[in-house]
Structure formats: structure tokens, C-alpha cells
Length: 230
Image (tube, helix red, strand yellow):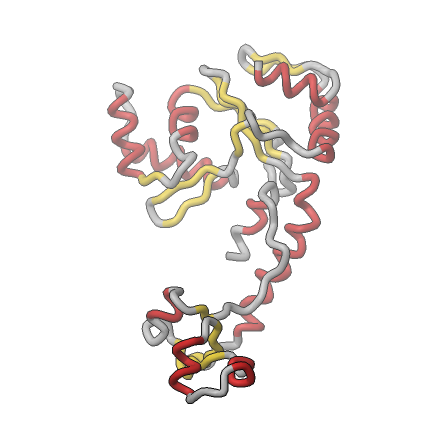
């Protein structure tokens, strides 16, 4: 989990992170033994509210305390996650990862601290595959998609290699054979003022460059976003 967090700095971070709690109706409660929880008992405060037998209080309670079947040093192994979340909260205001689909070109602007480059441009099969991962997508689904578009000469290995490139760039997360893109479509979504200021700095550092048929020129960040979208 800690390794994934730096790639999420453009998404709103959690306000805090804490030890899990067992709530009634949750999988951890319903299948507590399966997940290694023992001595599941109502929060002590319930006994001050309800002067009832233990069984009756247990049937009324919603929040429960627990012990681990096998002792866990949760503080040690969760510390990296807590540290990454703290960094995430600091980086969020100036981080972003958004994409603009121009039909033939897919522009991905990456303003995260982990970004290898601020701008990536994908065409053809790369564009198709990336856009297809806006929701969780399997390798089999991607292979079927390529066949549906009558794209010849693209093997399953080619697809997997392309997806791995996206993963290596931090633009997609992978879990076994499932993929999910991280870039946010630029449409109803609008970057924050801090991000727009960073965006202008990047554009100014580019000066004027030709990216396929897309020309990036200087101007206000709002105008630049409008030009890129249109």
C-alpha cells in the first residue's frame, strides 16, 4: 500500500488514518474468525448505557473491540503508510494528473512529484488501451477490445508490454491481471489554482513546441487549458 500512495497524490487524500474498527454488518465482523479476529466484544461504553446482560448488549452494539488471533505489530508495519499519507496531504494542492483526448492523440499532463515527464502523448493502440482502463479492466478484455477494433499484428504480449509501460510510468495501477488508469479526464473537472500556476510554469518552460498536431504556446493557464481542450 505504501508503494502505491505516491502515485495518488493528485487525488484527494484521507483526513487521517487509524487502526481498523469492527463494525456490525462489515465483513470483518461477519467473518471475524476467517480474518483472524478473536475476542470480539462490544465497546465498553455500551455497558454504561444499557444495564443488560452481556448477550443482550452484544446484540445491540454496533462497534466492537477485538484481538488478533496471531499477535500483530500493527504500529510497525503500518508506519510507512502513515508517513506516505502525511506526504500525500502536503503534495495534493500542487499535484495533478489529467488527460485530454484529441481523437488521434491522447495528452496526459502529469504534475505529480513522481512524474517522469510533465507531458505524455499517446496515439493508436496506446491511446485505445489507456482510454479503456477508465474502469477496472482485465488483460483478456483488452485483448478482446483490440480484436473488436480490427487491429491486426498486435499480440497479447504486445498488449501486456504496453500496459507494463503505463505501469512503469505510474499512469496505471496493476493488480494481478487487472488494470486501472489514474489520469482524470479534463472536462467537468477543473484543476485547482495551485495546479494551474504550476501548469503555466511548465508551459513556459516548454516555450513553444509541436506535439504531433498539437502546438503548446505561452499564455494564461486558463487559456492554455481551453486551447488544449478545443
